Length: 426
Image 1 (cartoon, rainbow, N blue to C red):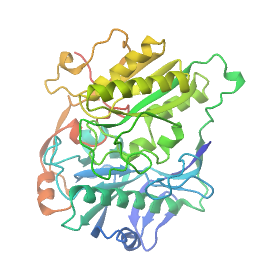
Image 2: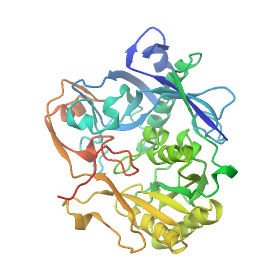
Image 3: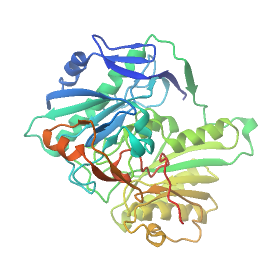
Image 4: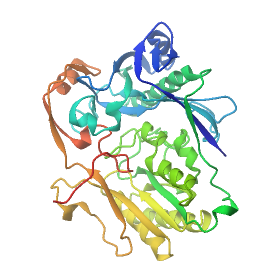
């Protein structure tokens, strides 16, 4: 199993009379893309806009951000289980429009802990500098669904539209020679000349049952997480469309773009290729709703790391708020008790911004803890010259000036290692 990413850099997006890649400029035929998306009868209309780095532009509420990618011939399907058959992801060639993004908005405020603004895309100032998304060129999709649709059906329509648009744009790179490419080394079985290097695994939560899943959430190969046990995945499956975020973006985010560029997996690959370690593989798991499920899932995950991946060490990350700390720390504790070294990543979500409130577990065995930022940063942002939203009411809310916490700016806080900010003790 081997995956090659053909990298096509994008430095500008414009609307045009055809969708094509011309140098580093991506031209988008809005009418053609609209016809494609409206094949889904849940949608009664779509609008498009473009946001460029550095402009005084604000968009929201954001449902998802996706890197435009498309699979080449003789490869695994595009987003298997959703756009394609549920075949194994992660092999063959994937064309990547690096520097571009498809940003899918919601029609209304999500009404959860992110408040009236939801997650906001900020394209200028300090919040943009703190987000990986502030430097991208965004095609923004403003959806309009049938008014009688329930929330879960609306969100499914957003998901399908965003993925279809991302693949549509990615196909503009077909028949273009990429300036660069990345091929991920095969990780199993390890070559004989790699004997002696430590085997390191990754255990990543992809959902938290502290939140009730939607009826038709498509998280792993097109299905939800009801009854899910931890499952071993090849790293390339994460990077190539097998795993998608919940309809309700996690506190400290996990967008489709994040999974496509997963920082822990790509860093483990970098160190694998540099012969610092053997990348043993990954386990996808969830945070549980009760102690019985938690014990089962944590023991199942730790056993996969020990007995199937035969790892010497593991890196663990969480998804969601405070409850997932319990699953994260218990899995790490179980691994440490059988001699497998662990490092866990956590996010400071304490509203009082005190160190004592930030750590939600205390096991002496789990002593390698990395804090990857949190909600301790906020900004007073100026009135935006341009606001992109689905309704005049949302535009008024987003125009500003606003006081914005880091968790509200999409891409600033990330629990899995993609944050540019970190918590400091002074």
